[in-house]
Length: 489
Image (cartoon, rainbow, N blue to C red; front, side, top):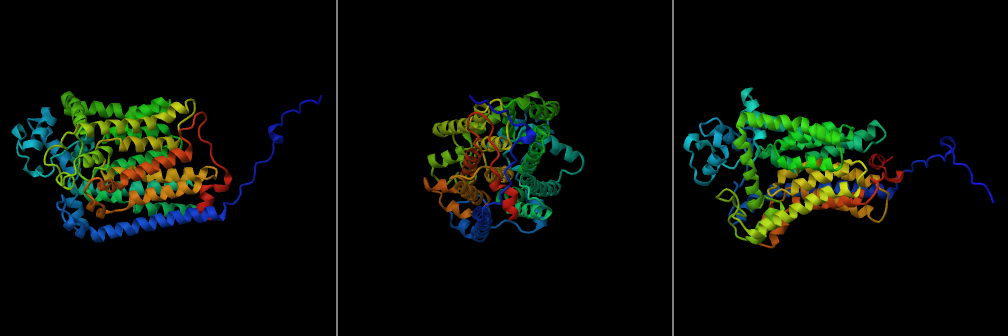
């Protein structure tokens, strides 16, 4: 009987397998998908801009002008999508009706009555304010500092646009190391080109929407997570949740993952912000926002721009032109029980998908891919999701690409890469001609961003194995390392 050989000491262990150069076909596939995705997105967007006037004129009804105002000065002064409703809420708050802010706002939305709120004639075309009151704290502070004009707020938005793009480029450089300055430059410039070609961010910038602040905060949160500071990531997400409360669900997500540093960072921002909102706007006004969220969930919007489960269900239930191609005259869309149930069911499924990895892989730490998956699910589970709300997908594309480059090569490698490219084209392109398909069921094609998000979810789940039981997804073989492929080394 032979003796069992002793275990090899670390010093005597077999040397690591040398890093193999990426296969030429893998490099060609990667660059082919990237180049084709960027080119196709740009071509579709250019065609969309060129054809917009014809599309709007061909529609039986439309809620927008044929051509947008041109010129940087016009943009800075006229982009008011978020700013006018927020200023309306602040105007009501400062009036004798300020202790019944939401009730006064509701009366103004439905009948134009102002009561003790005084003259609100400046806001007759921007009645719908649906943010939490915590979102008004920075706007009020900027007004106190003399930076609350529309032009100032749009200038800040322009800065947020640049920060988000730069953060995505830096995320790509850090997550896809190229092994040298030249390779890092290639990765960074490529990522920046994709970021600057992303339609949802341009849409938010052109409309003057505060979503750009959320996009920048989320991209910075991804960078913080990648750098090992989940506490900073939690704090940044809490700042974003002050504007978009759906992102507050990431606190529950972090609790299930037992990521206490993320929770601590989140609460260090969220608790003082909530207390400040109560101190400034009163307890009643803050509690009344719960009814506003319930109304949004129950009714939603049927306008074509609402690319959510609620919007899709509305357009399938009500194929009429009014409301689908034009803004609803009333507060939100009419109530349909089937639409309400579809909204709840779809939101529940997406929430379960975001939280399921924490249960399946309990005992292991959450990854950046888990964080990205949850952020997408909580975003599109909302009853109202316009194209600019999909701006948070931008850093997720970098994360998803890194996931595909990290995983071992198998039969899924090329299909997943092409799925990622298809998702990008759908999300990044400006395609107003899809609105010509306004009759049901063809109007399903008018939700490219929603289907882009679903494809991106599929890439993350399958590519990173997020729903596999047991250990966290392993990093892939060295024969398909992202930086090496991108750098062509």
